[in-house]
Amino acid sequence: MRFCSPLLFAAGLLSAPLLFAQTPTPAVTTATAATAATAVANGDAILATWLHAACSNEIALAALAVKQAKHDDVRAFAQAIVDKHTAFAAKLQPFATAAEAQPKPNDGKRTTEASVGRATTMVPFDHAGLIRELAAKCLASESKLLAGKPASEFDRCFVMMQLAAHGKGVDTLAVFRSRATPALATVIDEGSKLYAAHHEQALGLQTKLAAPVVEARGGR
Image (cartoon, rainbow, N blue to C red; front, side, top):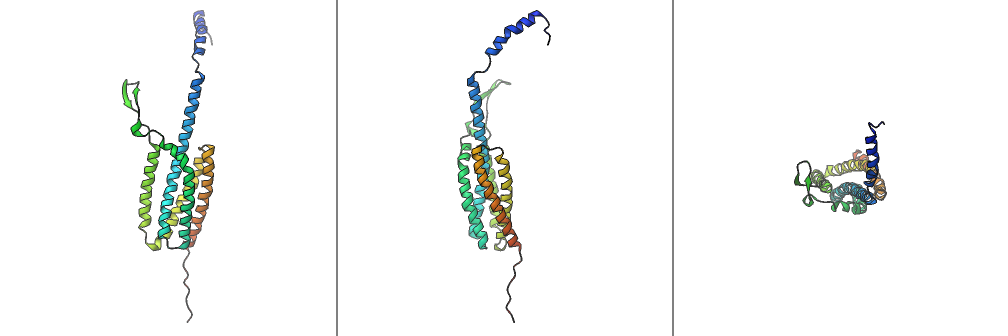
């Protein structure tokens, strides 16, 4: 690079110490690290909240099946979902709880928009609230669908719903694991085994329920 004049060259030399003096201090680096750590924790909280909400819905539907299913093996499958998913949800809860500490819409602080020079309220997006609201809506729709089935169709409908839910759960856990911290990833690994096992059970029940019933006939 060529300088246009000795004067500009001298100005460049004089400004160099000033630029070095303005280098961020270690305190800024520490603050940046703290912000990054918070972002990682919040990421885990959102992932865990998604998983916990889905798990809770599966528990609720399974509890309904425990009471209304016709076949013993379907009721046993439903009870296994209640028991094992409850344990999985308990392990997710500490991570999901961090989402509760995030600012809610009514906690927004006032700041100044430099572009217009006036105060405005910056409202943080309530990810956890959105997840829970969506989960509640889905549970209401699925419960209504399942509860409205006649006894002859209830078991098959429940098994099909769990087959779809656990298949989606396996994929969801695989994707979420790649974005989770090691601590949450360990819990997700346990959940992946659980969802895969229940998916296989649902496949077996689907085949069994689809098989024609052969009635024994007495001889003449």
